[in-house]
Amino acid sequence: MPPTAGETITDFEAPLCDGETFRSTALSDALGARGGVVICTGFAFSAIAQNWWKRFVRAGWDEFDDVSILGISRDGPYAQNEFLRWLDRPDFQFFADVNGTVSDSLELLESREHMANVSTPWRSAFVLDADREVHYAFVADDWISPLPREEIEDAVESLP
Image (cartoon, rainbow, N blue to C red):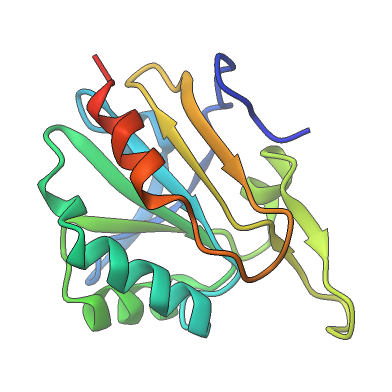
């Protein structure tokens, strides 16, 4: 079962991309002083991911105080960095979950019909405090619904 409010997310480690470079980083080291917003999506350049992330840019998520904005997708680090450059948002970062181990640890990995041997995480969002405790969790029950942006923003506001 994916993480829910009140649980603590496992401190996974994966390549973290910043638009230029990438290095293996633990989730705990990527979180801001108040925590972070973790957004899981299948692939960075999918139409849905492009739509979502541009909405986050327009909504000013880069202005959250001491809260990191962290994506997770199945793309490799070079594609993740290209996506971040496309967003033109150097303060957002992406974990490259190439083998799906991060998504699997969050119990989000799902085989995709009509995509032979491909698994992607359910589209989801988690607002975490600096100790990785989940303050807000959303896991979509379909592949196209938008994330509840306002609810995520409210959860960020309430972080200590």
